[in-house]
Image (tube, rainbow, N blue to C red):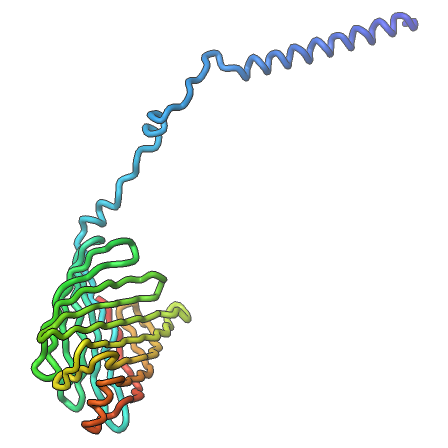
Length: 269
């Protein structure tokens, strides 16, 4: 092959490569274009593909219940002892529930404090619930009946808050504030600080009620959950009288404050 033939072969090969490349590009462009143009997506198409999800209908209609005895304990202080309880129960659904609360104290075989509350609760969001109902005090003295209104909830995991206002007989009013926070140390060891305070609108020495902040209790309890339903615990409780209630106790030579060592069990059903 002479020099002239060599140039002719090279030019022919270059032309063939160029034609093959253009043909491939044209085929790709043709394949990328749909034969029938796709219609634009409408709101109706979106609603058909993603219909609104229904609510938790099964949970809303289900009837559930629980009983929790937060404190069933023996308290020891200054050569004496007392039995203390604090329990609640509820039955209902996700939105509306019937609540029962009870707390009290027995010292040296005598009941010094005992009350029962029946409240209707209505959830206003996933974390808060409004409550209203009745509270009956059996002790101290001859007892007392109250109308109750309040709010309760769990704004953070493990943190429970309650604020309840009471309107009682003889124009007496009261406010109770309660808070507890379950601190998970391990899967079974839980440390729980608690605080409770009672405020009254008027003096009533016969029922151990003094105007203003009357009494408070701060506690710290460490429990071990053998199961979620059974947990023994130990702890300490600091009880203190304030204001007019402290003056009443001072006149009767009562202690204004006590530090109590406690031991008990927490039950859940």
